Image 1 (tube, rainbow, N blue to C red):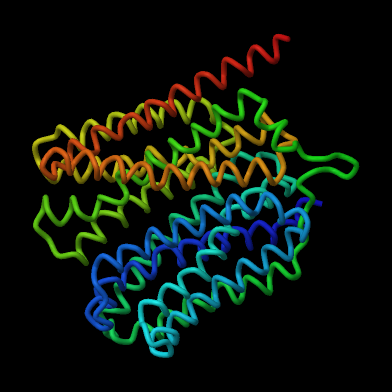
Image 2 (cartoon, rainbow, N blue to C red; image 1 turned 45 degrees about the vertical axis):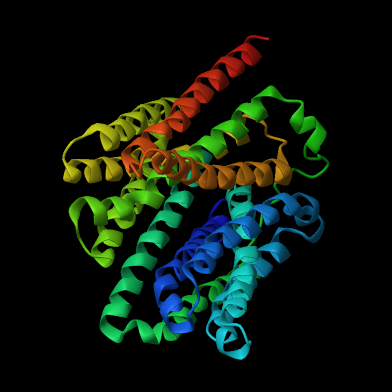
Length: 397
């Protein structure tokens, strides 16, 4: 029974690689787009906000339509849109009178696909029969990290050897992954998230549960804890060590992604021997220490090491919160997963934004910006302790 779902889980792993491609490939081309299409930097930076905003909107709207059209159709659609956006990125800037409008349209299309993947992949894996769902969830989320690191490394290697002016070839190569995985999802078995005869919790029922709100805040803090450092790691490497952007990207975000993936892979392999709450508590404490290290260590190289350690510490936060939600609210269904994904995305925006605003107010002191964002892992740690307390009270009752 379980063996027949191995292909489903593998396709979900690839689904997160697809999401990593659509989120991380285009930003590598921003400066090239600025030079080639004469687009102001203010418009270029809008692409990140736009991509993120579309994904937030999809997280919210998916509550109403995913259950109606089904997970298989939604999964195939997510991959088709992801591939279409990458392909259109290579033709629309030249086809339309405004290159920026062409890029924006392509980003919108693949952002819808990426947003759908974020909502769909975790519940599909959660529904698959397995001995340890926490292990499977952690392993699943590690593939986003490997995808992120792979996109940065392989794209950088391609640009170095073939020239960045040939980026369209690489975009088409990356588009082959979602195309292939769309065919996979058309065939693999997909287990129902809610058993026959049962119904998932409605939004109003979900909103009445105290543990849901704690988990939602934990999800926001998980995204914020991760991205507050990840988004600024390259800047740390460039400014602190005085190295090139290419080297900065490899030393900063890629090192962060590899260590974050390693943490998820470790729990994915040994999670049956480790209590999830304990792992999350220790990780949160390590995250707080890494933030303090980034902010107060006087040597730039040590601050960069603290950035990498932060990647190791945040690895379990996102998948661990998903697993805790599945255990605490087994009837949560699509609505719960979609709202948790929405919370995670809000956090991914809030963390870097808070760090950026505070550093700007203090004379571009990025260390103080990161220090302000330490509130997120502190709140996450508090949420884990509160969840444990509520679960104990529930068992006692």
